[in-house]
Amino acid sequence: MKQQIKDMEKKSAAELSKTVQSLKTEIAKLVLERKTNPMKDTNAVTKKRKILAQILTVMNTKEVTVQK
Image 1: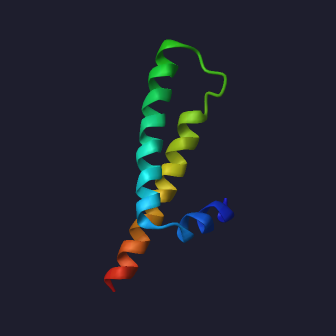
Image 2: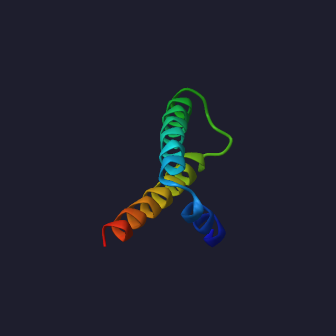
């Protein structure tokens, strides 16, 4: 978990924003899929949302650091 965050901190803002967009589409697909078909991994949406929140937090801290 901490290693993932360290890897995210090394990425540029453009890479992180691409990752955010792809995660949002994946989450939307998973939600639709969950409503139509039973999923094997019922926790997949929660995991993706958690990763999304971590990326957004890293992006926000980078932005605040740059402003100071």
